[in-house]
Length: 143
Image 1 (cartoon, rainbow, N blue to C red):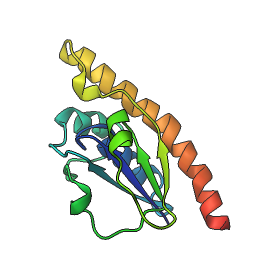
Image 2: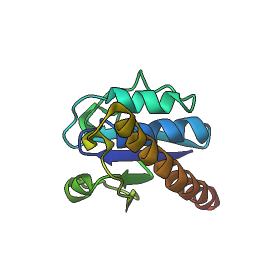
Image 3: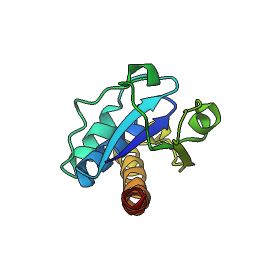
Image 4: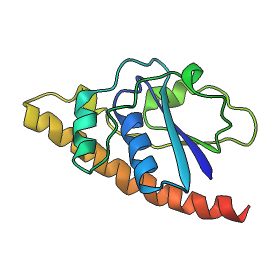
């Protein structure tokens, strides 16, 4: 099984949504975790927009790398520029990849406008991350 870590600054929105998407849609093929270089708390709007897809991330929590079980990840994906700049060194054959997404937690406007930003980021992540990991699964299986 492919082991993937999503790394973001606060582990509040993007990395949490990515973890939920992957563990839901690629269950049994990929196991995903998320962490932050400066963890805070999961954003309730991230929980809300994921629930719209039938994905419950309400039991996930914001964590640092120190909070994760001792894992050797096959792939670390940074989902924000700051995490890419501060990404720690991973020993072994861990591959690193950067896929930057805007921070929906910084969206301003009415609740409807902010939710629209969260949905746009969620949908962009789904459209980019899932096909990428499907490809990685086949490469991982063949090695």
